[in-house]
Image (cartoon, rainbow, N blue to C red):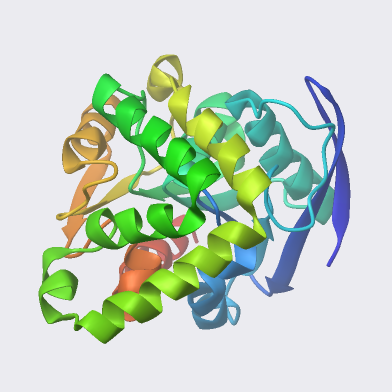
Length: 273
């Protein structure tokens, strides 16, 4: 995959990104502990016939490299824009999940002239004390025993219907998968959790001019829906769409995740023609 050298506040980073498809630009920004293809694989497959898709790995994820230390949200914005520059995408549709949703919103507020539309899922503008307490618990459990963090996520990242339908074997299998994923990226995961703790993009929300649809999972226990309602109220003319499921919708119900984004992004692309 291609790489772009992007200057951060701490030094030079090399941003690894996926680039595929044909059509108007679409930038997809992943969440905490994921990477571009891992977060967005099914959606990339669904949309590559009508969008040129760029999915960067943020600092702490995938093959992207940086000088280390704290990951500033402003630097993640620089990485997204730097990858888009390197790929030749002057203007693009923009979507994000979780931390990636917050980064996408910040990109839209930082460079409003470049963003054709904005579609964040499970995003937030400012980390409140409840979320900070939760993210600190994530970090403590990850350092102590990644399996404990994986078990917590089974209880908090999935929607009610999924939790009711799961068997004991389902929980064990999902925990094993999440444990392995956390162990594989533990250093980067911890650095991104520290970023989650420091989010405050409130001042950027009035700067957003792109058509915006906020996607909110009704059972989100990680970033509760009132945070998405706040985004919808603070961004001019934004529309809020609620979908069933939890914070981990890309992994809990990939079909619904893809369908929700596809409907919105196709409508944005058609409107932009």
